[in-house]
Length: 524
Image (cartoon, rainbow, N blue to C red; front, side, top):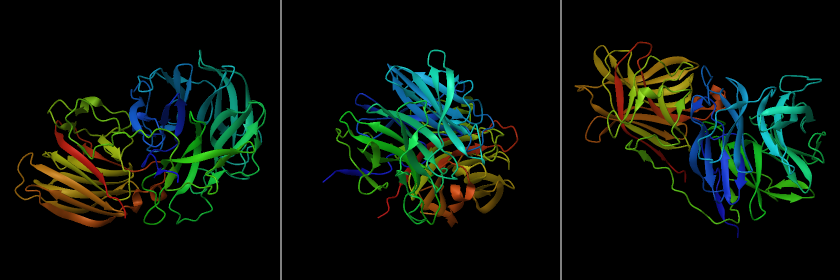
């Protein structure tokens, strides 16, 4: 019997996966939108166990997120390797367009960006042919006969990798397999048995998402779609199916000749609500009559996946608790947009993360005082230990569950009429409302408080502890459904983080966080 492993292979907000193999090593990247650093890169030996080894876009010089909407910024990266060099190509939809960065070590450092002049559209990809030529593949509106917004075409053009400039003619090679369907996008080209194959996503990244394929004997001539398209979709399975909006695939062949595809998909819960965003799944592929066959006999993503014939190489799981004892934040921690790193310190007080209060707010398209991690399961406990003494009614510090600047919950310590309070603030459609608050009696200056957010599926509970490990319930039964893309819109999943702000006024105050913990609660 085949060995099975859990799917998704990267749970939580890891959309638009792209993969490449170098010898016996596999590398995978995903989109990050308005979060910084951009484009995490993972390494694996077995396609099942993945360890983050870096963030490709970790400098402001590489990644300008100024003014980026929460679902703006970085779209759909592709990673490829050629003759000792790694290439990552992506789109900054908010500032600059399509660009490439390179590295000889995938863990970094990566180069400053090479923006590609004349490279219109989104979702760029690179293909290196047998003769060493490199081709840029992208998505754009039809050059001729565009019928509606999203009536796209896939185009290809040779790229000089020395000058990072497009050369020669641009060719429209496919308009997708599906009639009257928007967004042929996410193109990747492969070569097998002297034929070129083009794998794309169609129908948008929502419920109708699908993977389709076409083939050609020449990379610049129109591709012919497979008559069994789409080769993978879940759109016909109903809104109550446990895995939905499957698409955006990238193929990889193992050193043993097996084929697999990484794709994005979502796991709704509590109804059709996708709080986790789009996650990275793995599915086996075979070739039959010259075309890729996805998960033979099943044709779907499953909650488990057949393990490849590769040596199982476990990786250390992320710790549930971060004590801030190191000199750097772990690689999976995220900021919003380009952070002012002088406002964060692991050295001002050893063993604590200090965040300075600044006027920037979480509700604005700025870089507020926020450090987060991804929500990776449906039920969990998120907690932080904080020391903070507000000096005015404007100042707040605590924890957040964040879908976007317009949709989130802030569980914070503040001041009201000279007394300190613990407060839950809901922001929905950009409008803030205090759901509940408790005055902290006899609160001493800089008194330590532990803030706990517990999620049982779509029900959130908020509690706090002041001493003796006794927790006081602030409010329970808070609905998390507004924290899904189905309510809030956009393309991201939830993050959970530490936050502080002086809400529009200048401040010299700060909050010290002793530790933060995140624990998934398995469903049985």
